[in-house]
Length: 353
Image (tube, rainbow, N blue to C red; front, top):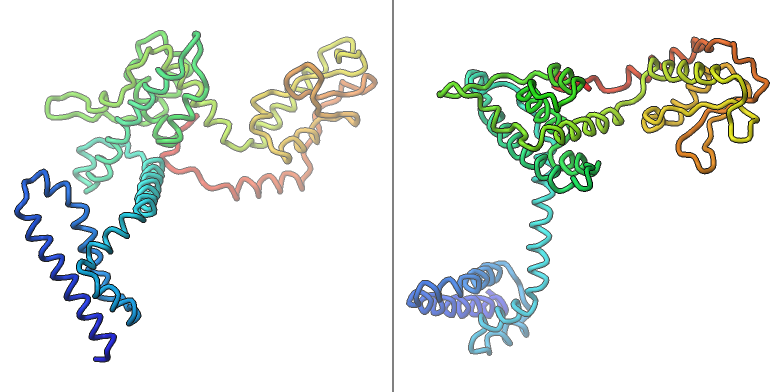
């Protein structure tokens, strides 16, 4: 053992004796005082552990050995740097919270009852999903309560819940709610029809009660219906347009452009029709290009108009408006088929809109 190794061992022994003395003193204190010093004790233990592997220079080691209480001054120095330590704690909390939020958002919906889960060894998945359903129900009620004012439900309510639980779970809880209140006339027929397409199984407990009622939303049924309508709309906007939907919009526009007897643009120079807002919200560049290819007009333009909301299809007043839709080329059909094949297959549990 060289000189510095011997000095380091001496320093470690001195720190250890100082910590033993501190521990003995602490054990004789009342419980409140022990709790008050618990953080300091833990940090001092960490300092001692670090010294087992840390190599200091001979000058540094001698300097600490000369101190009557090297452990105390090391702890005091650490306390001066505590801001950095607390920043690490805060960062750790934030990172952990983000990870847990992501896990909750991506947690799969388990739609089957407890008996099925028990028989198939899936109770952990069932319980985790059930707890998330109940929490999602609470979040929906809070979102409705926080975002309803002036007889209007702010669209931010849906995003507030979807961000926490994901679209699939939010819609599953809403489907269970609508099915529970199927008799209530304040819920639209469209939403009732949709809810009946979602598999929500009875989940009987030992008292023959359905456990699923624990995640039935208890807000005003009319507001729940409005929330669901907005949620389904938001989900629909996430779905890519199909070739049939593009063709349907093209046919609708053609009919609208053929209706007027005289040009109906603001300046009376063009025939025009507004492109469906739902279409524009979902459409990408390729979708609008496909739409234009189907309409049989050489002067066709999709544009906005001053002082009017929306996007409009405009054609010159001399266009032959009696034409039919163009047929997609073979190449376009092949490209569309290829694009649809590349889209990920829907999961069995994906919710129908």
